[in-house]
Image (tube, rainbow, N blue to C red; front, side):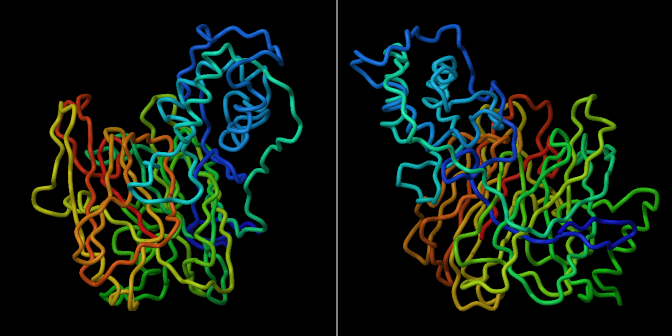
Length: 466
């Protein structure tokens, strides 16, 4: 079922919220982002020569040693008709791109998986990261002339991951305009109101987002709001939204930095999409509640930082998988104290011209449990987010006075592959438990100090938690 946003508000739209899965990996999970040959740093001119002989190879062959790795980790994207720029599901293409593939896997830029995966900094499900031995096998195959080996038919292509019968929310065809200013130099943030027409409470267990024009869509949020919530001054959430919408009567939606717009109260961020994501599945048995009667605000951050992007329009679809009940109810929270300094007299800034600079923040997580109405708190997933100056992020947790330990780390940030990561086992946090995040940046390309902000030219040190 599909519903579409209307102006000034409320045509039925499909609504559903949060679930994230890494891109281009095994188990059939796919990515919505389009890979390019530059992602692989291809240099096929130096590829080793091979006769394709099936016998006589002393080292690894394609079909016997390399193909099983590719079919497990790579071919959900890199197959004929897939979103990858070339296929790796057959010998001829794999040989052509062998040198490039060996270089990309050695640099760990492919398969896309930004977190450390050595077992010393959290353990996450559905990892796409290659083991050192797998990387060495690919390198040895290339160095050995890329022999084919004996063809085999037992390797199966994974099925593309897709939601079954989702509730689909669709934003109107909209042409964004640059807002300008220090926080939106090439950007516009626009919100659209959609009624999912839910009579009873439901739980979001998975979601997928399909930008109509990916080149201008920087991120997408889907936020359930209680339209009758009293925000003060005799106004409800819906009153505030209608007032914001009325400020631009000739355009769909309303301007909205941050979340759902100035004065609109939001208590959950269940759908967070950024480039590189595919279908997102919450951990089995979990979900986040959407109340019956809630409306959905879809916020889209448009970025037009190149002249050819100005004037393009977009209509984005958000697919939500809903369940009547779950074993464990969760909530998605977004934390960025660096961004929060915008509301202080002197916002924090990153110095320009630095090859390495950083910002660190910490919060008392355990104190949130009573506020949420829970007796305890468990972290089940993380979503790291920075912009173009970002280089690294380290997440440390002190569960309750034992001292900090590494929970997740991004050693090589890549804006084009932003994924949500779910822990193999939830991390329990006591009342005095603390979270500490350190973001590293390279600002050599900046002419002026870099302000925190939502614009692509600004920076964030954002961590989503489920």
